[in-house]
Image (cartoon, one colour):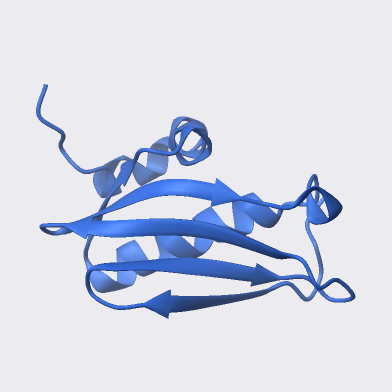
Length: 102
């Protein structure tokens, strides 16, 4: 179930940052943090407090990251297990997946 009125903002600089999700009626904030490596952003943590969990907050954070990757031209390394799971659910995002050396 998606949350109506969820507000996603972005803070940070070229080296690191986070997407923040604020939910109407709650002081809790969901976060997706990342740091840059070359032309990629390493998505390292998705954190959603229990009081706003189960309502699509984490998915909205990943969607914001993906939208920026498409518009700004960077690739994503899903170091966070949730972001990795979202990439598996969305094969249409494959072109945004960063090549990682084996």
